[in-house]
Image 1 (tube, rainbow, N blue to C red):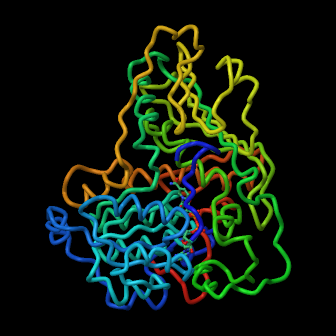
Image 2 (cartoon, helix red, strand yellow; image 1 turned 30 degrees about the vertical axis):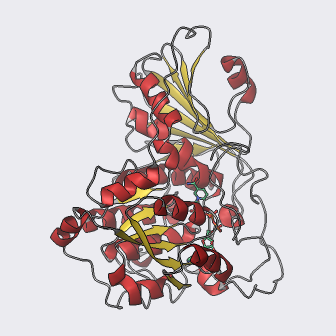
Image 3 (cartoon, protein in one colour; image 1 turned 180 degrees about the vertical axis):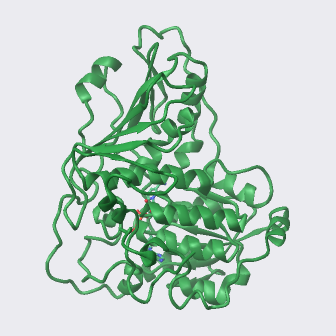
Length: 461
Ligand SMILES: NC(=O)c1ccc[n+]([C@@H]2O[C@H](COP(=O)([O-])OP(=O)(O)OC[C@H]3O[C@@H](n4cnc5c(N)ncnc54)[C@H](O)[C@@H]3O)[C@@H](O)[C@H]2O)c1
């Protein structure tokens, strides 16, 4: 099993107007829907949430970040890991050594078909293109779900997952563990104290993808032998068939490929845009515009700059609020460093307010800027909560989660709308969130969902 990589700074801590079949994403995968896995009645589920017993858990994806999720979830005293699932038998074997009594399978559909009665909770820590199928299957079977970020690979999937979670009444938590860390909590405290006043602009940036995974690349030619340990067809899942290439997709590097991942903005946007949407309580954006290079058919571009306009509210100044996302090292470094009078974190969110600026990073304490103006303001320590344990506690009826799928779907949608805008450079795309469409650019609607491979079809939800 390769070592778990949390989304951290290096050295840091841790189409569719096309037709009903596309729009309709989402029910269980083919061969699975009819397998007798029925949603449990809501009142039974609620009763179960009140129980004080062990939470019987199935871990889906146990290498990479899956190993970290499993370790964290299992470190809660009430967790009973009863099943493990991974398409790579080497990763599965490593996890099975830690949980020898857990049932180990390679195909998640088999897990739901044969073992659904023995678990109550699932984590889905697998490549982005498989989040929606697995999470929908789990929610429709009445399970609680800890699901990795971004919630899904497309906007339509995110909405379907949120809808299924609502219907199931399940406890859900998206794996944005930074949402529960002390740095964001301290930044929120500073924001709420009113030091910067009402906000008139937000900038969010990430150093990804550079050096982390390939982007801006065309389809690789040729094929390599599939390792004995890997079930390549299961790994592909809903994605179109393509030959296996050594170390190019599995593990980890799938992120920049449009069939599997969501690029730098999908990967990091859920961590870094979170403070903006959360602190400001923003509603859906009014428009999105990309001023970077377009993606090719295979992968996301090497860098991007996407500007959103959000409706104003009581915490913002008059007029739409601009929020600009920068990745691939294209943040306005010099201006930011001048403002901060020193280096700034390569992954952060900066609020510009009437009286000053607030820098929130998942990996460093927050800062009020310019520093000399706010020298007398103490930086609070913030409060850290174990994000995974918060989920387990909520499953057991104690408290609630801080990143439930309702919020997670919205956050994911905002990040993924940036990826849609990339396809239409230098055009301001008006967004009708209620109808889930771009009223003035219907071609863009195509990118809100994705075709699925035959045999893995989703059905009307
Ligand atoms: N919250 C964070 O800080 C954080 C950090 C890293 C990754 N992630 C998220 O975690 C997810 C996994 O990322 P990763 O880097 O660990 O990827 P990865 O490629 O390393 O895959 C994780 C594990 O899932 C297994 N897997 C792949 N497809 C599967 C399938 N269909 N069924 C069962 N197992 C499958 C792989 O064999 C591997 O063991 C992604 O959504 C990613 O965005 C979150």
